[in-house]
Length: 245
Image 1 (cartoon, one colour):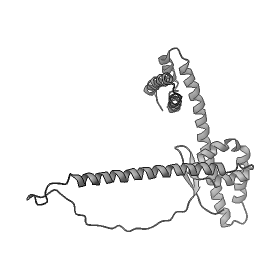
Image 2: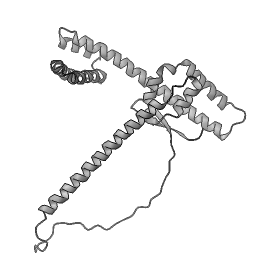
Image 3: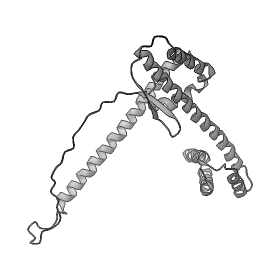
Image 4: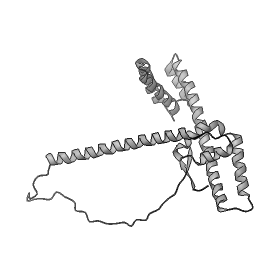
């Protein structure tokens, strides 16, 4: 398989990989003499600084250029989202460990987290046993070719990326489940302050809980549940005082 596999980081705890070709260009430093205005005009020859129509017009042009740049950037972001969505929908789900390996090798770096979550049930002992078997056969082959050596590098990088990604994904799922339990505990508590203090002692006031609370607030706002949103915002303020990690 052509290409080079390189490890990157998709999130703080999840490794991602992609085939990349690096083209290096060498540039030599250049030096220019630049004339700077230092405001020295004792005879008043140059006159007062321009702050009238021309200056305002130049400022307006800069604003327009910035607005165009912002719109162009937003358009590119939206196009990239659509491209990635279309790519996800066009990919068939592999039905064997061998096809799943190729599936991940053809996955873009920024899509790896999504695909790990999507394929998590398939990333089981059977899959990793097959991956290790192919690696072993390649490593201990009597006659090795350059393609075989490249394949070993690719599979080793893939194995590392998937194991780290699975660890991060599983940890995230555990945090989400625990955060839901803790939020239910707070909502059903008769003494919120005492409950929060108890959770502080157990190190249960954390960022996953805050993120889940923010999600609930956004949902309540979207559903026009004003009182519920206001209550949860007050709760968020209380949680924020006790947050640790």
